Length: 262
Image (cartoon, rainbow, N blue to C red; front, side):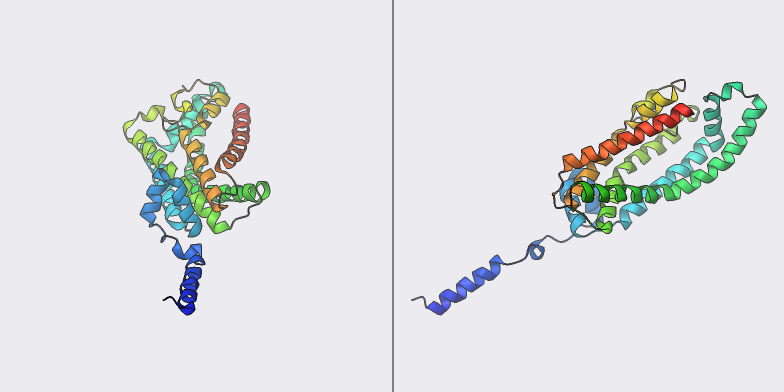
């Protein structure tokens, strides 16, 4: 015969089971390797895990190393002098310059360009991710009313940028096995239409074609998924994507404007 005490005890145990917090039943954080792979194969679950346990050092270091390797490979296999010479020869002022002036411009440009390339290789990625992080935090806070912490946003941005590692590997392969005379540092890999355009193409068109890049759209899609998970899906990923896309289009138009001036 069931006593009132045993019935009360069972009910109390059931109530305790029902009040277990979600944090206590969550699966343990994914390993770094699982997160790296998950960004490509299961981004939703991966960014949800990153949101619960932010961590940006592994993807940040990977991105910096990839950027440095690409830069140093370019300076070694292609050479800054060749890049500067091609830019001068295909510019509007190049047609009016004497061979001596061209050579002087190449030497000066190579010295300055080498310093800038080394600095950009080491600092470009972290600075770029800080900018993207700030933009993402502004969007989810001002547009969707869902502010998130910096560490979470920066982790999302750094992990989303892992797709650019594929572009880095392709760029290194192109520099080793492609024709250095036709290397275009603005479109080094066949992931955008600018890669297939000739040097005689107008600069605004080249800038526009080079901007529509597969890896750029992939990056924006991952940012949208990541920031959506960071807001616990209060901000929908599709809406976030269009926000990033709109800001990116403004940047594309600005780049085209500068290309017209050049």
